[in-house]
Length: 405
Image (cartoon, rainbow, N blue to C red):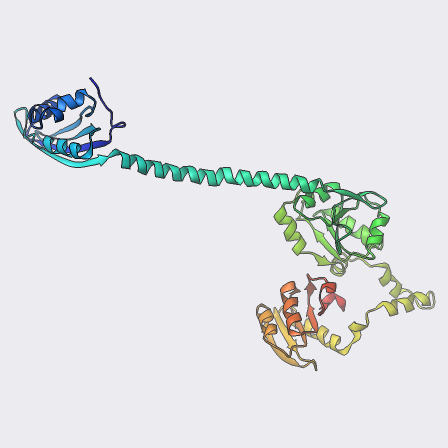
């Protein structure tokens, strides 16, 4: 006998049944077939429809309670929806099951195709989420790996000592010095191409020559070895401009892209590093030598001291900086170095932009690019802060830090 399962049906008729007595499943099925026989004609005879596979196996679930029986009937159908509705209505005519009265009610006719369509939509959503979360990032990762490999292939040899370097050494105004070839490769991997390796503890002559014409930023490991390299270069007279250290305990060759960029943003001036490390440069040593021994060197030192630090306005800014320490505030002055007002440093950039008369600013904080840009727009001549993260050569505003005094 041909049969269809609920999986292959187009519709499923869901029926609720209530019987005033205790009966079994065969009694229910027999009553349905018997009491609908001849009701709808030969073309919609339940037995014939089931034999031809257009009506599936009738599933019955019964539960006996207090001498009565309640349950569910499920009838799969591959007829069209009108014929299926007629079959459902015909089943409701079943009034007795065995010796007991019964009440049969079609609760719903389920369109299996809609149910399947809903399943397809939900499953498609899950698959798309998996594709987005797993497949697409893998593709991006593959692209990044290829890009990084290409960048790492750009490593060159530079100078007489054939130092490992990035391809942008000649064109860049600023050079980042690192310890070895592995450090160069790691920075190249993340698109930093103006990098050059020291290749050992001895100071290459190429580095000495570059220090005279380019801005040098030393990027060292975050350990004692990094401190030794800083001291070695400074004591050798290399004209460094900035120093960067990797996170504590990490080496430049192993840090991530995020750590590299965070370190680059946190570079400090070499003057600050000398102060923190207690390094006395040869130039400062000359100042302590008695004049009658080497008077010529003392004269040279006096000529080298920048004249701007003895100007009255610079003296005024120094006094203001000393007064501001720990306050997180800022003083704004006019051309006569008279105080226009005091504001919190969080409001300093916006205050400068709104003032046309600001001539000098002293504040308890770092000089950064945002503040420099605001000062340039407003015509400020002096910016005095505790430290600076901006190269003085990159702005027309005169940048002054506490180390200049």
